[in-house]
View 1 (tube, rainbow, N blue to C red):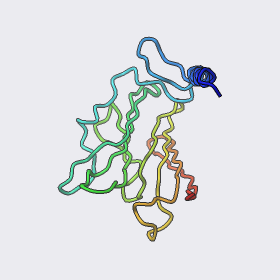
View 2 (view 1 turned 90 degrees about the vertical axis):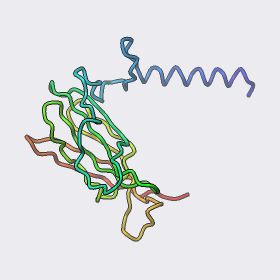
View 3 (view 1 turned 180 degrees about the vertical axis):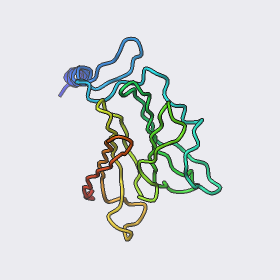
View 4 (view 1 turned 120 degrees about the horizontal axis):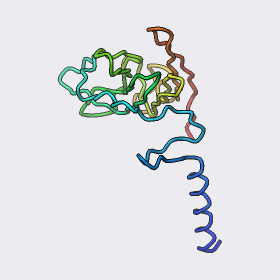
Length: 172
């Protein structure tokens, strides 16, 4: 293929991606087509730096690895994945839900569960979805996660229910 053909292919791919993702002219925020994910919060999101996450990290600081914010049912929500900032390795994440109208974080996932979050979103229906890497057993070396985990949290009253789907990761 000549250089001109590659340029056309690249332009065509950009048009397809651009059509699948829209951006708002006011903010430039990219949102998936179809509105499956809640729009960014209209109300100011919770300032994560001003919230003490209930994690016991000893001498280490708490680090936030992922954050998503949205307004759902008129309430500003922020969900964060956080871990103890260790000198070496990647410690597992805990997941917390922060509400603008409540100073107390709701813990959705414990760091003791051993997951490292790779994706975290608040959906327009108010559910929270995440993807994580994990381990099938304690015998698996901590540097080689062998399970992909799909996490979904749904709310019923004041209670959050977590469901997870684990899929083995096959090494090539």
